[in-house]
Amino acid sequence: MSVSILQLNTGRSRVRSTVIGIDVC
Image 1 (cartoon, one colour):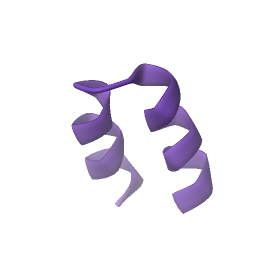
Image 2 (cartoon, rainbow, N blue to C red):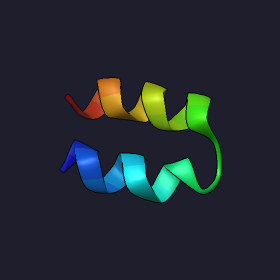
Image 3 (cartoon, rainbow, N blue to C red):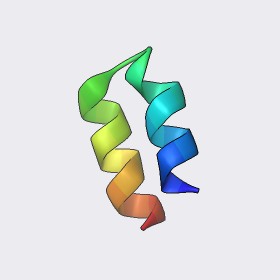
């Protein structure tokens, strides 16, 4: 699940994707 969110966020913001990825994990 975190991979999908990270990939989708990568297009928008790298920092945000990392924060969300950790939050989801």
